[in-house]
Length: 220
Image (tube, rainbow, N blue to C red; front, side):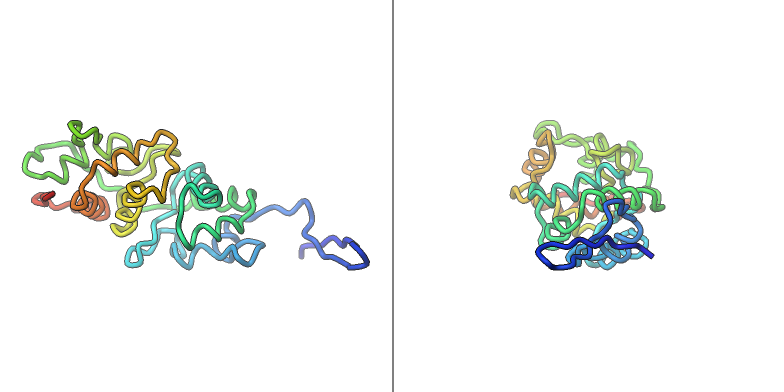
């Protein structure tokens, strides 16, 4: 049982959390934070943190703790916008953000498919994903996000296996300015150079990375 400290202010007896309170990442994920506005994460991201594809909620399990913590703080300060996540992030303390990010990073995640650079001359989607289009200053997605789109470090999150709806929403957020938390503005420029059809096709490609269609074409 947690012992609460008692503070008398202006004749009122105030019950306060002890200064030594340590945030529990698993508790934050499953039950929410101390502030009632900090709702449990599992309701949207699933009990295993692997997301809910049908609703477009992304996988969090296995993502780098540094990346997750940065996103929550970016939601809190407004450089990344989303109607549900912004108030939730603002209700979390720094300790809770760090704790839940560390907890999620340690959760097991499904392995990403291996997308090999091979003969893809007739597949415009694969060419864009693996090689990019340097004439438009678009690098191949895997050149930053790693083999198979499995993610690299704290700045390039996994793409493979994330819901297509989520990936489309993020690319469009980069395009319309509602997401601007890329320190190098790399994704802003890449997303703006892509057509609507390419955004949709690339999102579906990585969402179904285990079995990409060899005949899928992008039509501007």
